[in-house]
Image (tube, rainbow over all chains, first blue to last red; front, side):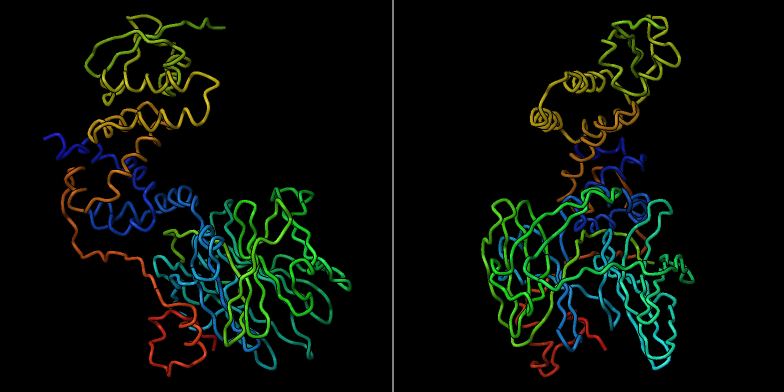
Length: 313
Length: 181
């Protein structure tokens, strides 16, 4: 009889049940919600969700965004494991595709299983920006945030940069927009905290943007910040000439998709096709180049992604 | 300054009392607190009373675990392989061990056993899990079982859809493509 209710001793220990469930792969969690009411509520609890995030980030995937160039019209999100993408960048293009209920978007960030999407509207007098948060695993979406309206004085526009991340001090997800006004060259920084009613302006000052003079474009250089809290820890990961990569520095739009061990997966698009380069950091040489020929041109960019149950609402 | 005594007296859930190497027993935070903060365990008369969950059999298993990991200089590989063998016990004992380790606040062992239990239940049906944990089937509403959605269309198919070569036959929501309006 012992095998029948062998776990009886743990039945009333919700904390230990949470411990056990937190080690399950995210893809099988759904099934465990049908065990009992208690288990269902344990799995939806914020403590469980957080614990699971800590324990499930060991097999990160990346989400690839495809964007049709020039028209900037179509997007799709595909999920891959990094190792499979490195092994076989072109044929493994068969993959599950993300699904969002919102219709127009630019994906700009990924953090703890949540993707952040930017939407905007421009008129002659102003532009409006708002964001959505989306969990592709639970298929839940936050709906549009309040919008940030920027008025144009004269014809000058704003250059903007988006960031999305988790602030562990306040236990919240935040979007940061850095704006550069093209006439005054003043920057301002706006922060939106997921679930809030408004955007906060946290900084306005002179010119905070640094530009790198790139008259002589001969090498592709990648820098990494080894320690996120140490600004001096920027280190050169790779420097390789465009010549060696066999691409033209002016027509290319070279991007890093992912890195696995010593291998770096790069991509760039040209008129009519897109190429994948696998670069070996250890030997500083190109391992392989594979092309994907398509009737349209698209740009590809990637974000790290690990599925979680975190609610975007 | 207190003299460190080599042995400590422990009383398990069946009221039996035994002597254990202090160095090993101190691995368990609960025992450590009893010794340092309350000065317990130094003699048979003031044995440390362990929680109900700790039977003599469980204590012996837990001490084996502590004894192995207490030895310095073991490689990660050795530790890992010991841990793997250590949790190859039946589900009931694994549950008992999880509960006992938790009551002694021995976090590394709780992680190890709960991970092993997760592997055991991973492939089981809800019905089998209810049997194992002795849970009521009390779900009031139907919980939708999440299934991995895999779209096995190739990128060519998807791109040809983007291009509109498909004549709009496919439902935009089912093929999960974002259209920027």
